[in-house]
Image (cartoon, rainbow, N blue to C red; front, side, top):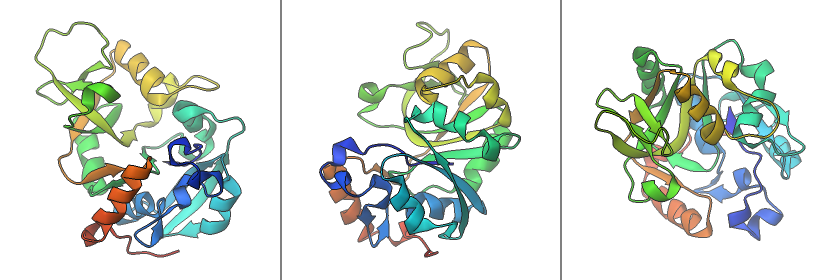
Length: 240
């Protein structure tokens, strides 16, 4: 699933007329890059949630784009990330799935991530990275075995050394995650993950040290466009 329903407020006024996932970056709409990651990993179908200017996204991508078959989950009102996954249950429930933000560039081997997730044996695996802004955005802390032991400061104390890392916007879930998804509007990171951790579920952090950038501000967008001019490895290989 690719999360694409947001308002893109930090990219206004550009996103007043164009939804953030369709903003052009390196000759492609921004959403092409997570779609290309899925295709490269052999994942041939995805659901995209829609809200702000969603008709434009549907019209631009149709039912198949960048090598991936597409379905759409309409939201009115916006459901936040956890509510979005719950609303898309008819496409996702019953099998392992990947969840990605639509506004990131990341040079990630998604097939290797899924294999690592299976090897970890947990309910969920988050792609994490070291970043000087970790504390500002909220630390996800892992132990030496890469198990997530503290999430956004909770629980207050843990009896083992931990490494604080930042979430990259990519995770893998087992279908049992739906046992922890509520109803209505809620965030999967701020509500669902703490609930799973408190219940004693095994959650893992997959540490990634490759290229990553979020393009949710005008500065980030400019930097991403500059990066793509010199990083051919990020370019989608399948056009719509």
